[in-house]
Length: 561
Ligand code: TEU
Ligand code: CA
Image (cartoon, rainbow, N blue to C red):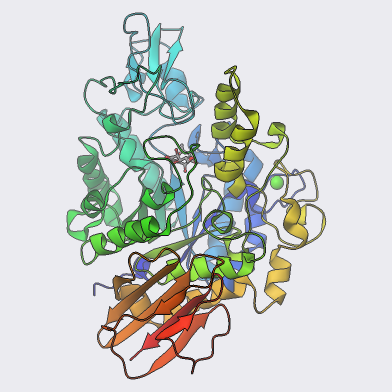
């Protein structure tokens, strides 16, 4: 049991644009965050992960950075940011900043220089290539539709952008780029921050020669993932970053890593290898997507798949690496609408999902609004959507004569990133207390029922359930360090598992359905007495738990000893 503070912490993610506006311009900002710190303190979280607040033209809401060492005007000033950090630390809350260094904005000074001429000193900060047979240098498809290459007339070459064409990829092969990044990281660490969340950090090393991806169906563009996910020099770069920067501070680090497997997860997080503390894996976020297709191709979740995936990671990291635990972030639909029931059983299922995740081994992340059970949104008009990924997909699909607009809207309602980006619902006043002006993206109309003010007053709310889960983690080492084992692997409604530490056992029983399946405790589980730690139906502590009929979306956690 290798104890570490970042294993015992709970992280809360703030997406600043949508969190709290303080000056009526409709955009969340840093002073808005300061005004809500007491709320976070009451929830009990230990660390805030703040999505980017750096200077940015906002092509991708701050994930396109034009100056790493300045604060975006819309969000406030460096003085505001410093006050925010101080106010967080005053409350015992740590701050993780977002580190977006796979790419910059095309308005970053380095890129402005780089595009000027082939012999500009900044040319090699980015990935430039001449045309191939009069076309793009290869057939890779951008994460936001179209080619990953953009032609630039100035020098008659293409530059690489895995995301939007306003997000050119940095060339990590260039030691000068790496040095600039490390210096910038120290700039923030020396201001006193407590860690970094690293955006698509497993994309920074590309395969030599940037070869075409296989394309058996002869499509125009295809995924180039195999040539930049977990690329050839990725571990070298992260070990260098550790040596140059991370090792000099006592901080928390998490790498966002689409396409990472548990075996690779160990390479990234094994403490002896000196890379990162943990990664965000995506395998459980892909289970409601048709295999081999992009996220817009929907498929219902089959619970045994979720159990397999979570178990694979729980057992895979055991004693070797460390997991992060999340259902939500600013890129994902709301979990209660996705794996729960956002109608009749919204509160029950939000609590069930919380219990199921927070009792696993790993560091839990809560995304703003998740703690009050916020849901997906359905805007009728595409013009109400703001997300570049959604809009590019919509434009690309509707350009096709055979497009089925209803089907496209349905996939946006189910998977679109703006589901997570509607403003936090603070109270039932106009615009949910988010702003006194016009919000940059509309508030979910259900704010009159679902809001933080209501949740704080109601002892049975999702909020107080999360607060209790966080408190339990502080009081029980077994929740942090216990060994995980799955029960009832094939059951299609029930997700149950144990955690074991010394002679103590936690028994977690959750029902992922509105049905009433019968739970039967496997015989191997021996115990003398039991106690209920938390449940979402006021289960009677004396009630038999070896064999019982579960209520819809029920969750029970027992301590056996
Ligand atoms: O996301 C990385 C990523 O892989 C995305 O493609 C993500 O899977 C997708 O948004 C899901 O639909 C990170 C950030 O979290 C995201 O907000 C940024 O847009 C992206 O990197 C580029 O910086
Ligand atoms: Ca504002």
